[in-house]
View 1 (cartoon, rainbow, N blue to C red):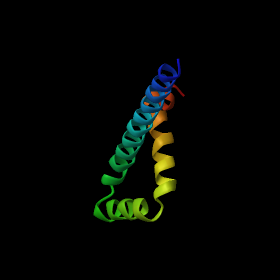
View 2 (view 1 turned 30 degrees about the horizontal axis):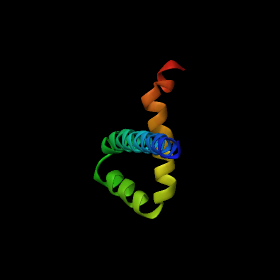
View 3 (view 1 turned 90 degrees about the vertical axis):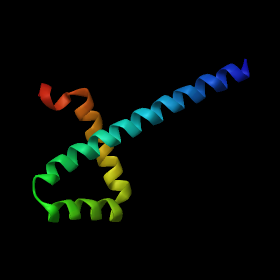
View 4 (view 1 turned 180 degrees about the vertical axis):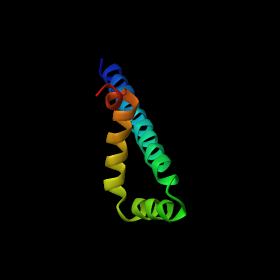
Length: 76
């Protein structure tokens, strides 16, 4: 019984981590799409913010990615 429970728990953790990684990617791409319209200086600032404030940017991109993926912003 224990190996089955550990396998199920491992699969749940894997699924959650893949979903978080996908939402971070979508959020980062969304922000980069907005930044790219403003020129090279804004893109440089975006990259430097990723380097200096990595945990904050990761959290923002995950939240924004979830919002974009679920379509919550379009429904409002």
